[in-house]
Amino acid sequence: MDKTLLDIICCPVSHLPLELLDDTRLRTLNTAIESGKVVNNGEMKLSEPLQEALISKDGRLVYPVRDGIPILLEDESISFSQVAS
Image 1: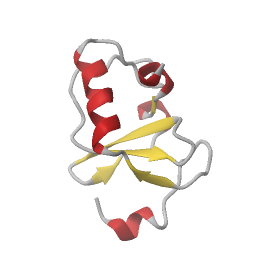
Image 2: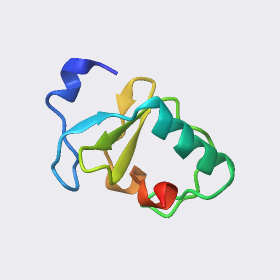
Image 3: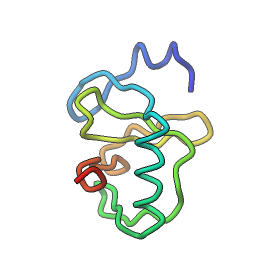
Image 4: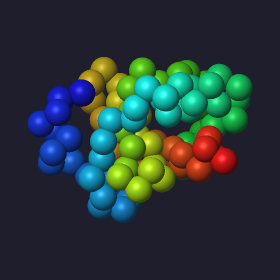
């Protein structure tokens, strides 16, 4: 993920800055995905672990990054509260 891009993009829902999801939270999220417990905000169950993701500064929404491209669509976002609770 290009660090310069992180300086200019923001969460399309909250308009807060985004940052890379750290390894610990990414592992937590992927563990929940692998156990079939995670749906995105488009109500689609996730089945593939994420290699990289962005999270809003408030820690609420996660956006997948696929092939280096952040997918900043509300329906593709994941509420981190379903994993962290």
